[in-house]
Image 1 (tube, rainbow, N blue to C red):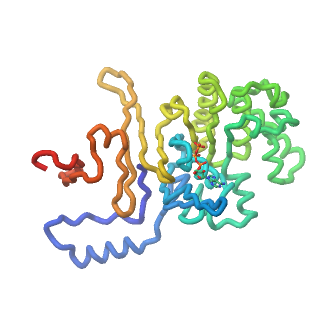
Image 2: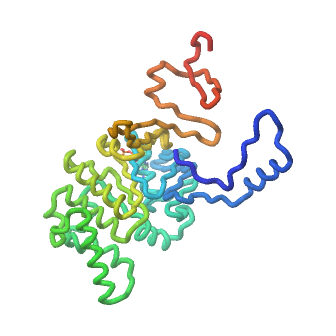
Image 3: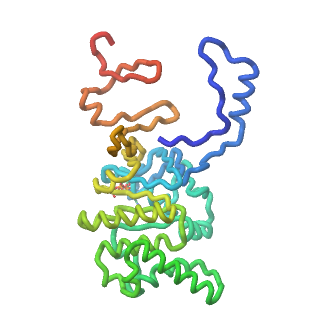
Length: 334
Ligand SMILES: Nc1ncnc2c1ncn2[C@@H]1O[C@H](COP(=O)(O)OP(=O)(O)OP(=O)(O)O)[C@@H](O)[C@H]1O
């Protein structure tokens, strides 16, 4: 998991001697120092809770979710149906407000915004792409007009120079997404994949810091979906957007550097991928699985690991020099 800088680092005191007064003072100062919380991070969620009440029944869609996303990251959020992915995405998009916890996107505190600030946040700081292709674009406007609309809604005056700059931005975005020649068409005259790429252009119109997408390839066949995913890669790489994609699509989840799994309203595990080059210059992708460690020291071990070793109820833990070993209870010698 990514670590956020939490104030000045303190020196570790060897276990065999008690800390000196100077060391204790240094620790106290470090603890009291203002936290550079969120520096270099596009998204920070801590103990995020969202409770829905429907027909007198309470549903805890998010149950203390923690998530940090680096600026410039391209990541996938996966998880079973009902695990809380869309609830999280709606909160990050400013469409819903959490019941408790903290959520910060591009330095904006999502719990402390006025209605006016929330509107500006949704227009300027985040871009959102829905699964339903028809929901992302206004059917009676051309693709170019759809992309220009968020810029016009900013309401900045500036006459001809401003209009020319907007038109140039529309052209650049459509070219970058490979649909420049479709600028004059209406959404119904585009394929599903082209509509989603146009939706990405609309979401990027005001140059948001974060792009959020809820199952953007869900209605597309895998080849078209791969093209749309490539468009996300382009805006991430060339337009510096941090991209978070909720997906069931194994193709998308397998292609991003980081995949975070949500289970029962919490982030439960994640996979980080990096390309490694061996001594013969051959490139391969190395994958490593991580689990979240919460403030009280709880970790949720991957179900497939527990099943593989038949672990349940109680496990034996041992402290090693640089690791903690978790073994099935009742192994001989443990
Ligand atoms: N507006 C709402 N009112 C009541 N309950 C809700 C509401 N929105 C979501 N829920 C509940 O919250 C839980 C999480 O739902 P959410 O849509 O976030 O899951 P999800 O992981 O996105 O699922 P899916 O993959 O099926 O879209 C579910 O139990 C859902 O029924």
